[in-house]
Length: 471
Image 1 (cartoon, rainbow, N blue to C red):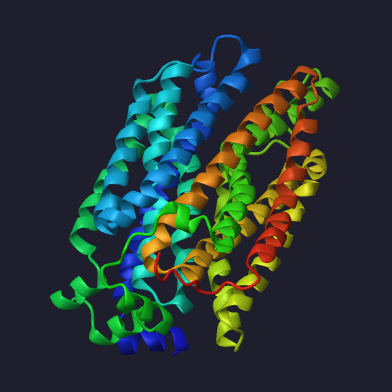
Image 2 (tube, rainbow, N blue to C red; image 1 turned 45 degrees about the vertical axis):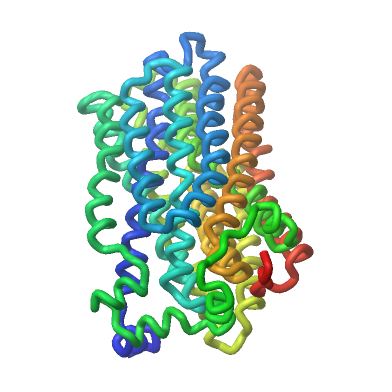
């Protein structure tokens, strides 16, 4: 029996049940937000993004930006709300809101109405990560948080895997409206399990669902317990106070630089792969004008829904490995701060593979898919660790608020990249060289993580708990 299983057998494993609940919530979160990108072409053909084809790319980016603006605002509101009302109610309010907003897309048939529902979805979905991070901080000791975060964060990939396998089929069978309705309804089922199974560790201890040994293990970080004893009421920390710390800015700028890369893959990967297929078809038909077979049989053409599923399947492994690696370093005797820093540096190197995506795509689209899969896997490994830096550096009473501030910064970065992508692709599409636009975007995507790591290291040389006494 390995050490991990041995610990669970000795003290109990209810905390992993809580992690599973957060995993499924995150899966649903990404299932709902992925539907738009997967139905982009269907919605364009239906006139949702305008009747003029030349304007559709920019209108689509406008709808994406509506989500991002609302997500940014929602992050600030959600972080503060969850720290105030508690994890259980805050998470539930968020999920009810985004489920109803997801269903609401079925009633939008123009750019304006879609923009409204995307904004509603973004504002309410913003609660997921502040609530998830606070849940993990409450239920896990520091040495297990990166691993637990990696596990729940892998739900983002599972949602992105399930979506391309299910959404196009639903849309083809019953219409695109039902794709939004059915995926949105899934979240309402989760609520029943959340209300039945979630409570604070203290409440679960009192009800007998949590062993005393596991409760003590969860609360085994001496500095956190000292902070809790010094402030048993959990006094809320004002944003202005939090923004005075370099550690807050390290997290904020790290999210600002790297979150937009994930948004780019999420909303434009299907379009990139569809474009690669179109170029392969065009090149082949130009050389073989008498070809009368299926376009799917043309050399180099791939099934883009399958390719998207492959990318996020690989990314799932990255998320789990991202949480495991620093834990491995810590178990080997490395201090937690150095372990986190080293792991994040390693994960910042792998996205550089995407610099070859456009060139390799000209040879074989699956080669481009492979580089993007590596980059997405590295992003999820990075994400598991950057989220954990918040609970490394801040007491539990401030975790959701700091996560919200950083999430807002990431969403603002997402707004900027969405507009850049829209304008860049519109420009190169007009020139008939859209692949050049994607090449430029991949340069941005590949270099963002090393830039973020350097900035975070300069601002926070060590990821250690700050002193909020008197805040």
